[in-house]
Length: 356
Ligand SMILES: Nc1nc2c(ncn2[C@@H]2O[C@H](COP(=O)(O)OP(=O)(O)OP(=O)(O)O)[C@@H](O)[C@H]2O)c(=O)[nH]1
Ligand SMILES: [Mg+2]
Image (cartoon, rainbow, N blue to C red):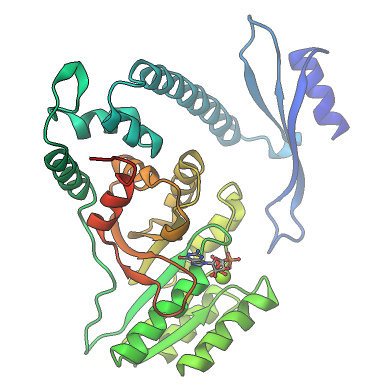
């Protein structure tokens, strides 16, 4: 750390402000025997210098051209993102208080550019051109529903074995959703279901799923490695559906995501659903989808719709990452609070504050 600080001081001068420091291990096995690394993010409050500069201190032996390129790319992407945010913010201010309809969409955190295209051509009271409010609502619901196309849950074939993994950040509802899915498919539809959990980071996590498995009457396997997952999948090849629960991962932890990616790579037929909570702020949700894209999720599954104060995030994410939607969950009750994404319901929730 002192060496990294000295390098920051040398590059940015004495006025440098340390924004963030991080120690991590590079290489090694399961976090052991790796080389200790230090990352320091520093900024310089000077108009002549770039506003934020990310410095990664790397011991000379490990300093490769690849690392330098990645740091430069990250810097460039961060600058581009800032520029886009400024443009969107400006656009948002320009379009503020244009019409009640626009206000409702913006209140849902729908990006201005998407909101504009949704209300395009609708006589919404702007410039005195008012239309029939009932008709306007119906038109807008239809347009939002169109944006939320591409809905497909878990398709089970009576003669095959479907494998589905739920991945996502911590606490979004992966395990609860696995329990809901298992109960519905096993108890209501009569399919043979097995559960596998790869979340061995917390004892309570295994316990949580074990209790659900026991109640529903389906087996639970605990796997500690990709090899064990492969064996467990082979063992449950006779099931109609195998549901894999995974540990919540931080989108900013590249090692965790790589580990998850390696786990899912044991079988190319694993269908991966990225679980996203509708209570997550759009900017964070964007980052989550961006970072989890290394695991190539096939579908998005939205949880906690009952708690969401606005649902613009769903539209925004689909605009930037067109992906099939699977289920939405609407409460804590197992097995009832889950349904195939209901786009009309979501559209009406977005427009709940639009009064006719
Ligand atoms: N309101 C509401 N709460 C939910 C919903 N789904 C899950 N929860 C709650 O969210 C909390 C976290 O749920 P978990 O299923 O443990 O989340 P997880 O993603 O497995 O969490 P980790 O394994 O720690 O990453 C629990 O209190 C659940 O009851 C939902 O649709 N609505
Ligand atoms: Mg869990």
